[in-house]
Length: 232
Image (cartoon, rainbow, N blue to C red; front, side, top):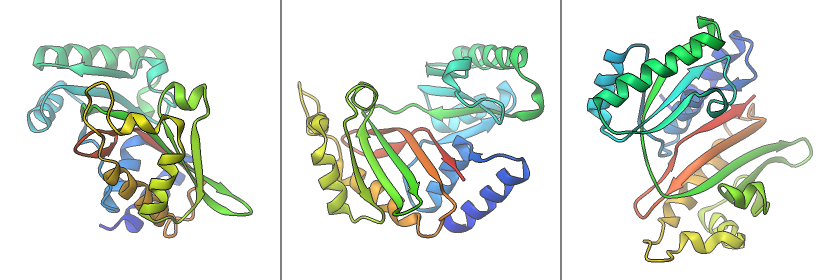
């Protein structure tokens, strides 16, 4: 199924549940439809399902709660990174489920996402739908660079890969992507392709009011979206 068809189906499902936003796993389904690299994941309801998912994804893993009642997963104990083996997986899976059940009803629970764990420099890709100008792309380095230094670049969508590269070079923290202290340079070409693909996808899904892909991990091999939300 193409990205546009996936997006329309997912947006429709969200509206039926009276949601103005799209969950992380749904965001990734849409992005995959536009051939954008995302972390591998399986939504699981039991430890047996989680173990089966782990055998196909491989360790280390990340666990994330998937629920319409949880907006900020990390604030509610709904994220665990660095799961290294089966025993850890079973233990942390059950702990996360118990924490959730203590605070929320089971009505909004979709399961727990078992995801591949990736590393690299953290980048944020954002979209805002301006009433006057239309969709605006935003790119910044993750962590303190956005939160404290507001180190971001903007362009109107759609943009080509060379324009995406210009955005990256405008960032004060761009040097983090070029290799430093013995680190390999990040695959900025893959990142530019991702930024451009997202910007062009917006023509087909104008319902998007806001998109926040954070983090996008960029290493020497790939640029991969690890988390994200869309507001419609």
